Length: 185
Image (tube, rainbow, N blue to C red; front, side):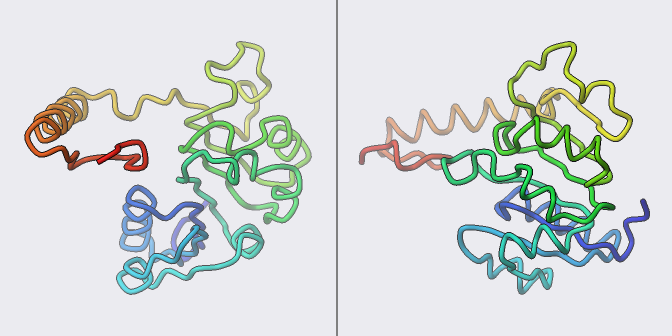
């Protein structure tokens, strides 16, 4: 599939989704649509991204990339009904969490040609069973969730963790916190 001029849909336009959108806009001139809990005004201004309802994201995206947190609201949000609303030519990419998509419904959508293909960095369950049909499907690409397994990435992670610990003991604050709701000031 040629990416130039295609529509990239992003479900969960946070830091990682924004980084992907910026690259796709710059390299391929892709139109950026997104669905989020809240609007991302920075992405709208910097990238011309458009906030759309979930059903519109499904219907209009040529490539739909998932970057959301796993919550009760996002668990299996990509299910049979969602895949049926997507273009038959669409690609579904999940690099967030496996349970965001319903794996049986995804397999069905791929087998029936309801979507063109899927790229998965995460599965449900993890690890996959060796006989999982996704592993032998020509329109599915499954990779291990090891994008951060470089020496440089692990070194940066270690430095951030050490900085968090030091700052917590110095000030009671954690500068690089993912889930601030668990920290009682």
